[in-house]
Length: 264
Image (cartoon, rainbow, N blue to C red; front, side, top):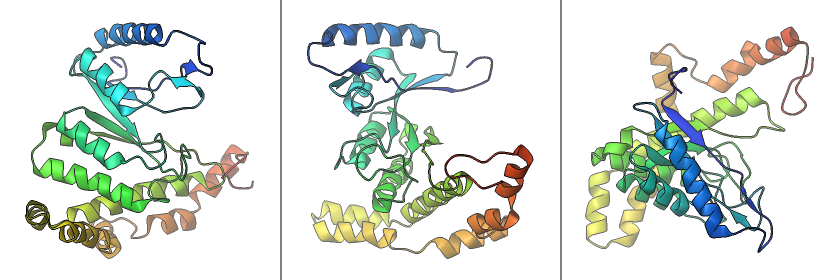
């Protein structure tokens, strides 16, 4: 980190067990804590340790860092330079990720995201492709936290961590960025004052309508205008395809990827 000028050390551990009785779970926790403490003590000044969690895979009985609560407790013990990294795909079905984000923001322990999307458990799909409302609600929490002046709201690392096996990789990555931009732009349309009034009045459906109204806003024309004003292509994906960058790159390299690639 010191040599490269990196601020964040992002860590995910695949360690765990497959069978009950395979190992002492409390002893594993103690060893895990000792290892993290050693690395934490070596962090350069201003550096952060971001702890990522995952409920399973490759371990199927017990994973050493299985959920956000475990990661949060470890970070509390380590100190202020340790924060939780939320990977959108690393959650069990039905998990309310935006609530986790809100909790960590309130505790100043949200370090960053690995953006992707899941249909079942850990699918690593293009972010926003399977559940765009969830992505919007996550950005809604970030926007509200920033408006409320929470210190950690502007210190979040945004990363894309996806597995593109059947889709063209560059288009998939670009689409991921565009989906994040749209979710953020929609979240900026939330009438926070009206939302607070409805919440304080106990107006359940009124508060929900304020949120869903912003989600239903078509922000694509606005984003196209913004890109044109900045001298950028209004439709980045089309510009990438028509520009032939990926095909030219493939020809220069002389190979094609096994999945999501282009023929030579």
